[in-house]
Length: 279
Ligand code: CAA
Ligand code: NAD
Image (tube, rainbow, N blue to C red; front, side, top):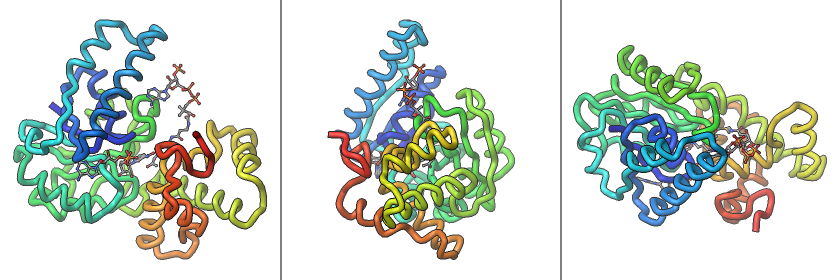
């Protein structure tokens, strides 16, 4: 059984993907409302696949049957592999890893879906740093083909091999990163998104022209501002802060406009308003 913690956009997608690959999943969130939202979004995503004949009714039924939802972290005491996908805050993640270390089986691997935070520091809050690893899914997890695996300073070869095997069983291509702020994908992607905010902030162009420029000019499926809304502006800001603090260069300073949107609660699609208004 696999445990997934955090039933937001990433945790619910990871749980759906895992259940659709024939693995029992227990999804944990502190917020029961988040769990009911996760349950209904997973069901509608699976039903959509059935209606498009991309998944048989039997397989859909099997996936739904494999999912359990709970607010009790102790339910993960039998999990072999636990994937954390809670808020992008080092302090909150560390305190979760301290609890998990006590609850999880001694053989269990503790993986983090963090976008940028040091795996080595998360691992050092446990008594099992060899069994802690970064398993970075891309959004939306059922669709995107990549998992970025991040080895902490003490991650063992056995933990790496088991994580790679699970990623491949989930149908993903794996890339491996050393444990430096932002790893590979966000080290490159987030400065581009931040630069798009600076381009808007300094009135170089409208949000529509910035996004159209990158979509049609460079064949990106979404423009950078649209993508920021999709990821969550709070998540983008947290990642920029980690890059700025960890890599120590002013070029990573978060754009004041991104900061202001987050301060105003304009967090993107999940709140109905970000750079764009979805209401
Ligand atoms: N769950 C399951 N399937 C989903 C889905 C979800 N949440 N969202 C979309 N899909 C499926 C749709 O069913 C559809 O399938 P078919 O083509 O088989 O019909 C397919 O994905 C395309 O979806 P749509 O037609 O609704 O919309 P689209 O063509 O605009 O694609 C998208 C949506 C896949 C999200 C596409 O816009 C895209 O690739 N955007 C860029 C996403 C991206 O860059 N993600 C990485 C972000 S960075 C990151 O994740 C790291 C980090 O730490 C921040
Ligand atoms: P989200 O805000 O959609 O969901 C976070 C969930 O975690 C919420 O439901 C919240 O109730 C829950 N939570 C918070 N503290 C908790 C705790 N102590 N125990 C259990 N549940 C708790 O966030 P998200 O966008 O799904 O991001 C989750 C993680 O995945 C972050 O580390 C983020 O950086 C990473 N990530 C995000 C994306 C993205 O595009 N949004 C992509 C890849 C990785």
